[in-house]
Image (cartoon, rainbow, N blue to C red; front, side, top):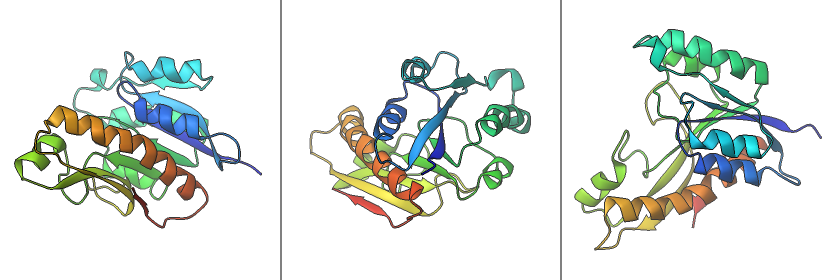
Length: 198
């Protein structure tokens, strides 16, 4: 069987990237083909290289605010790698509609909230401030709207009375590392039924 090719976009330490890469073994229908970052100092690049995965960097800073020019450069290593699926894993640049439409239906993202709640940043602090009983993470297909698109999976955690944004972030991250690989495997088999954990 031919494996689906997966490119993973990161901006930092790449812990979700590592959980995805390490899951793609055995009878998994996909294999990693590229780890791409907008930050040459991203710790995840070394972790990918250690695992024998091709890496590339396209620094967004020289482009100033010209997102189209940055994305044109971002597309070059992506198109060379010929991915079937693109996973955003802590990629901290907002992508334009033009970029998204080019890979529509093939691009996944993980977001640290139970979407549609708390799109954008500071999700853990916002969930605590709202007095929510639970919080979690969501994997969704990427569309042109930020943190939107069909939901492919969610994992829920209880918010404890003494939780801080930091402790809650750690709890959610543990579930991100379980949810994202589970969704990717199902998605790579052509199944978009949502994965609900635990």
